[in-house]
Image 1 (tube, one colour):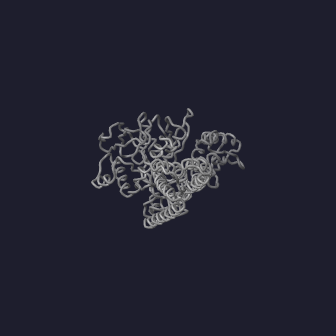
Image 2 (cartoon, helix red, strand yellow):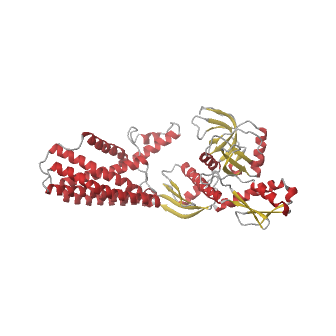
Image 3 (cartoon, rainbow, N blue to C red):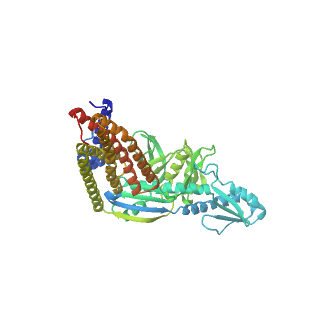
Length: 555
């Protein structure tokens, strides 16, 4: 008999079986990957498939788990870029775009301010002079009235511009809060554009993330070269403002001549039939910013250039009460109704938005072009052969490490060492199962984390077995020695694993790139190794003791 409750044994062996099941697809990586690609392509094509896709789908049963561990750039090969976004360019563009507004605002009080002239100034600063110095306070009030609230969670209550007086001239520049919000929106917009461009070519598991204040890390496995990736990022998204003919819920509706059927981005089973020829295109959109409407609700303001403003103004004047569709990459992201004539090329989109949703919509509207120039600080291409070599090297390191650990444990602890090696194999399977389910990318440093986990896992069993030896030397029975060994070693095992996990968590949040990959794998390994070292080995020993009932044990 053993002291392990039946329910606990069932839970332990159930988790082991589940882990082996979810780790299984990684043993047939190429077949499962082709199966998953075929399933994704068929779903995207609404069920239709080529004979090759049908054959690929049949490579793996649909009823089995099919999640596999994504391979990082260093294991699959691909392109790596580190780009710096020139956020200062956006400040200059914003301030340059304000000159027509300032000029028009002062034109209304021309009898008090006289002639209005733009003066030379550094980029990002607008200096305006008036010919009548006595009207300077009136001019300041008119320009300050152009300020709008900063739309961000950190800039609430601030205005987007600062208006001051310097040597008799009006100086306009972005406020510090607006600069921070602009930086956030600029990098977010760049991320959105890059992600859309990369996703269109169907690459697997790209890494596109912000680094620091104004840098973006782009890693795309499976792509030919860094030059190819740079060309892909430079592609411009297709944005258009189209007249809406009608709305339907039937995807099979046939559009008329010079019309097309487009799905709504965030509304399932909603389709818009729009005219193929847009009224204006994204090339004529100069800006789109989150704002507030006259009722203080989040909205989105947009601005066209002179040509787009004229075309949009003419269209809205003759189509009041009709909807028009904002189409991005063949999807309708919004379809507002024209409430009135919109002259000057500036309009506002209202709706039931939150601040975050209005910001996101503004990003989508601006996703037709990168908001600022990007400088590529790092370019690196990793060939698939090098990635395959990395996998082989990692496998060799893991095999050698596992072999040496196995020899040591069996030589030191005999049969109980063998139990530890069985639990170690289960531990590695659990790591792959968890990484497969959560989609954590495996990198070369991640393989190092797996190898390190092997030592950490057996280290816990060394503590347990040494404690058992002490209990046996004190004359305790085998069952009591096993019970005491696990119970008294648990605190030391917990302490060492908790401190190791805290270190891994710190590495994840402070580090980047390879350091994060190592931290993720190590964190998962700490959890699984503690489970297998404490519970799985105990379940194996309990099973052995229940079946063989030995009078003595050798540890």
